[in-house]
Length: 229
Image (cartoon, rainbow, N blue to C red; front, side, top):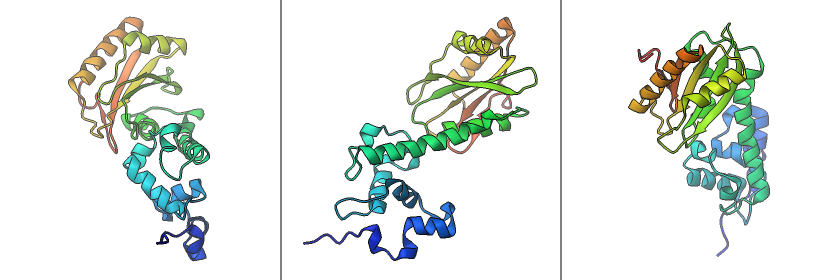
């Protein structure tokens, strides 16, 4: 029996993702429709939207999609190397856009300021990443570096790596941050212990540790605000 699946060309003109985006804006499209635009075409009597829906289901949503490699993407029916590269390029552009504010003068006046820089970079990652923002004497962000990528529930970083990087860019102060892939930003005992060690090392080398943020899915915790610093 012939498949009842339809292609995008079978949809009325005004219901196709590209046309809807042109008329109503990107915010009006579903996640699957936005992915379908990146995929451009379907395969085997299956529309790009159907492939996008399967892709989201396979990845467990956008959070998981961001962590899939090109090789993993190509294991999904309907996604070859070209489509996989297009998807990864779109994801990477989104990440770089989140980072782009660092090319402009950024001043950190509160934990919220630092969280706004880092949350979109960290919230979707499936492994813990430990990142430092390096500040000058006026609290301008002068550099950012990822110093560790850990397992699903642990980030391994040594104070010497942090302060070696800080001294390399002549930083006067640092703000540390890492994500919890579980989405829960509650600091662990290890997070608190690491913060204490970093503060002690900072006092020795003369570089202030201003805060340590734990980034969750849609919220964060400042260890300074919680009284751990």
